[in-house]
Image 1 (tube, rainbow over the protein chains, first blue to last red):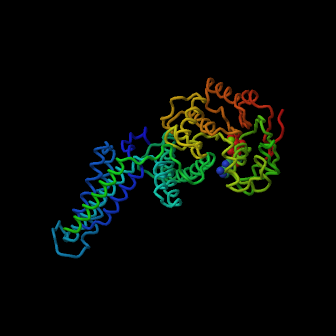
Image 2: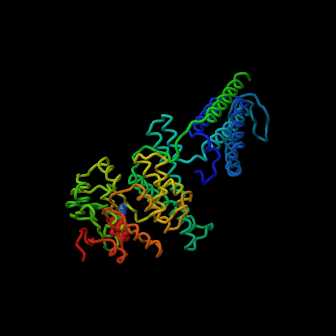
Image 3: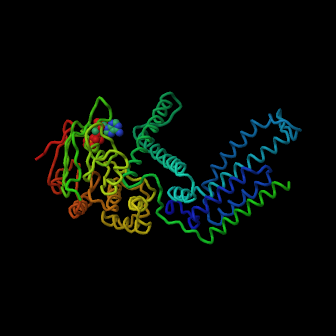
Amino acid sequence: MKSVSHDALVVLDPRARILCAAGCCMATALATQPVAVIPALCFPLIVGVIFRFPFRRLSWMAVRLNGIFILMALTTLPFVDGPAWRSVGPLTITSPGAHLMGVMILKGNALVLSCAVFLSTMESASLGHALSRLRVPTAFVQLLMSVIRYIDVLLEEHARIRLAMRARGFCPQFNVLTLRTHAVAVGALFLRSLDRAEQVADAMKCRGHHGTYAATRTLHWRTADSVWIGTALSVIMVMFWLGWSV
Amino acid sequence: MSSTVIELNKVTFGYHADRPVLQELDWVVPAGARVGIVGANATGKSTLLHICMGLRRVQSGDVVVYGQRRVTERDFREVRARMGLLFQDSDNQLFCPTVLDDVAFGPLHLGATPAAAQTAAREALKTVGLPGYEERITSRLSAGEKKCVALATNLAMQPDTLLLDEPTSFLDEPSRARLLDVLARLSVTLVMVSHDHEFMKALTTTRYCLRDGRLVTDG
Ligand SMILES: Nc1ncnc2c1ncn2[C@@H]1O[C@H](COP(=O)(O)OP(=O)(O)OP(=O)(O)O)[C@@H](O)[C@H]1O
Ligand SMILES: [Mg+2]
């Protein structure tokens, strides 16, 4: 969405962006040591800074996400066996538990960050086009693209229903009526989104679409793409080296 | 090109089995004709256009388009490449983030190169009087603007038949006049559903009324 989100990463080939994100995510998933995840955190951060990624928009999501991670960690940690590391009130955090918590939080953030920086600002049509050029199975690409489109439809319908409700004097309060109104709205949301998704599919068919995605912009692999892929590979190698050496 | 564009033989269709919308409907649209359809709300005018595009499958009867009986999705692909449908609700027609992407989508999927598709898109936008709208966000346009962009998505595909569902809704007087001018100059087979009688009179030569699931000739 070039004009929509001022995507500076648009200079890179979508395929390069997908490969960078996929590589980082895979290496992150395989990492077993907290320290090995750190390069996977730094790399997208640096790329984001270079290409002026709107980190501010991501910050609130990051806060909430880390809240969830920490909550999850705290609810599971006491059940991990092992020598005690610290005790917080009645809880005893074992050292394998602390280790796991570190890995979990770092990994979660690294995954979100690579996907956000490399993929989130990409136009969905480019994503579909690039994926099919990377020989990802068509069925998978189509499924992914419909999910992406459906999210948009849901949000749009949600905005419309909320507007219509407010126009008729609805203001949320803490009572049964509000609850019931919300229930009705959610029902309406799914029904209408389903209808609209079907109609949009009709509109796409009318314009010659039957399954494959063509992007408005052609794909050009440039030297810069190779350079960034190379950098991503080095980062992944560093991660493995750190994982082994600690 | 065969001499009839659309031929419906005893077409019956309903969204629910007990409530048919169209009943044994017969209809012939010769090539180059300019046909208008009127009818009360909910009589099935939009449904009829959707059936011609293969977006709805009839329960019985034959749908013959461009000289061939069309049944499967594959049959209708060729139809959709040549026939354009302007949806009654433009929100259902437009689905890309920017106007340019949306208008270029059709040509692109008909096999044009991205550059050619963009040129066609710009050309079509100019025709409907919206030059400079290329990078605007589709979902945030006004209703009238959306209608014009929706028409541009059709024109960019250079159809030889146009099915228009309420083309003048939401249009102000200048836009309506421009649309009239554009449509009058196009050499296409035209089928139009509208409640705008003057517009209809100016553009069509044959008029039908959809009533009780059938088309009857209307003065
Ligand atoms: N997707 C659908 N599912 C079920 N019923 C439908 C659907 N679309 C339309 N209908 C019903 O089919 C009938 C004909 O609808 P249609 O939209 O074709 O009418 P129309 O003649 O175009 O009306 P209008 O002048 O209001 O546009 C209506 O009774 C409508 O409720
Ligand atoms: Mg209608």
